[in-house]
Image (cartoon, rainbow over all chains, first blue to last red; front, side, top):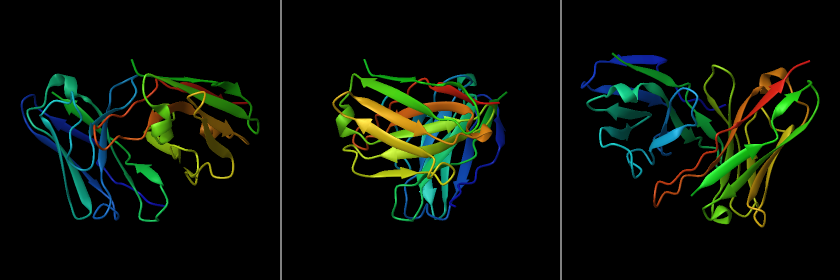
Amino acid sequence: SYELTQPPSVSVSPGQTTRIPCSGDALPKKYAYWYQQKSGQAPVLVIYEDSKRPSGIPERFSGSSSGTTATLTISGAQVEDEADYYCYSTDNSGDSIWVFGGGTKVTVL
Amino acid sequence: QVQLVESGGGVVQPGRSLRLSCAASGFAFSDYAMHWVRQAPGKGLEWVAVILYDGTKKYHADSVKGRFTISRDNLQNTLYLEMNSLRTEDSAIYYCSSHVDTLTGKNYWGQGTLVTVSA
């Protein structure tokens, strides 16, 4: 079955930039989406279709994709950005089978 | 305002069945494909199933295929997940969510309902 691979954790200092990669064989043809989930809360969409930012999401969140890797970038990380981040996409089967990456815990300290 | 409210969770024995509901309000439910996503305690998100806006097509993750069935009632603005032959590994918070609207970036989630499968 299809898999999306992310690092389990990253650390960043306040005001610095961090990048979270997500690798998957179908990403050259399929869009990546990114979710932020804080403890005890439902996920929140922060990036869709590789690089689009929903209304209300701070500009410090950006996305890109190249080849088999999609990347979420947090520029000028804030303490409130500490959360789990998940990439999300579909496979190449032609069916609408969706997959989440394993998640990346972002620690801001 | 937009609301997705899941219900039907609880404690159930292995092998038994449960039906989850997700009541939608505040948006055009019948225009959106809808998903179920689950999260086991302390674990990551796992996609479970999706159903097209009109219910004509539905897809399930391999881990639940043949045991779970997603359905919807657009007149009642309600999404369902019928879960049969439950296993301990199905224990999780189950969320319903709308498919991402690619024109606006809107994406709605409920707060989840907890399912515990235990003898």
